[in-house]
Amino acid sequence: MSQRFADLRRSVRGNHWMLTVPVAFLVIVAVADVIAPAHIHLGPLLVAAPAITASFAGPWATGMIAVLAVVAQSVIGVLRDRDEIFSANHQAQIAALVLVGASLVGYCIVRERRSRELSKVRQVAETAQQLALRPLPERIGPLRIASLYVAAEAEARIGGDLYAAARTSSSTRLIIGDVRGKGMSAVGDATLLLGAFRAAVRHREGMAETAALLDESVTWNLADPVGAEPSQETFITASLLDIPDEDSRCDMVVCGHPPPLLLRKGGVMTLEPDRPAPPLGLGGMITADYHVDGFELEAGDLLLLYTDGITEARDSSGRFYPLAERITEWSVSGPDALLQRLRRDLRHHVGGPLDDDAAVIAIERLP
Image (cartoon, rainbow, N blue to C red; front, side, top):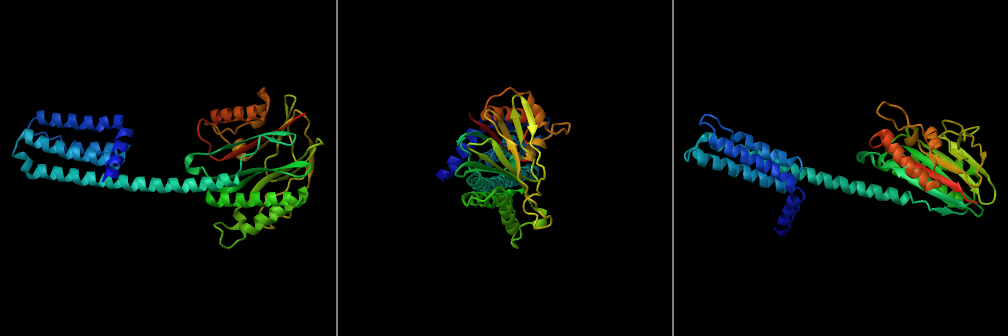
């Protein structure tokens, strides 16, 4: 019983200003009904008070307003005519208030129960995603790194965008990717890919061999007969990079993913691969040739890796976000400042939450 009263106090405390609206409505209707002519009955309007309360409050506050509505209807009957409270019409109005009030309380109980269940499911899914998507360190070898994960709207918060970094004896390996789809299945696919990536780096596989291993792992996982989706309907785009500690020449394998952007001396260069590979996990439908492309990352350069949630973000007129054009106009210094400016500008462009998750990594080679 004490727990119920505590729930009621929390419900009333959290919405006490808004509860004045249905209470004031009850008072106004009751007073108007009492002073109205005998042939006018405003009592049926009292049912709107618990209905209004149910739109923003829980079952206890809604039940309290429903009880007050029944009391107000009884007071109306006494003040208008003491015999009226025993009339069939007045009794029917009170019964209707009780029935509607009980229905609204039941609706609030079901709504809160489902809301708690959904919250628990989201919490578990987000925890699983956070365990897989570990935050990148600010400093790895000669590199300064900043990462950003922009979640879509709350109903689609769990996505399959991924990134990771791992050290070899003489370089830093990075991966950024995007799993087709959302939900726990996408998180599971992303987790498997990140595990395979770390295993490949630990066993010192080459870039082409790493890409082949990742494709084999993803294809094997998607071919699992207990999977939720057919393998031909699921794939993962990814970019793999190897940045040496002592050499400015870097290696890159792009598997159906948006190409990185290189910021150098106020200009932006798109690092288009010579022979891009297909996305991972196509199950042998396309013969993959994992060609390793090279590019120069010099001291002071900024390298930007991103998923298509950035470049496919649309404004109110349906125009895609012009990433390369925007970052050319900015005078920012360092990965953190670049990503902070990018987040603000992206939100302003879209004018609200994104339709898809987006991940970005900014990398600067230090002198």
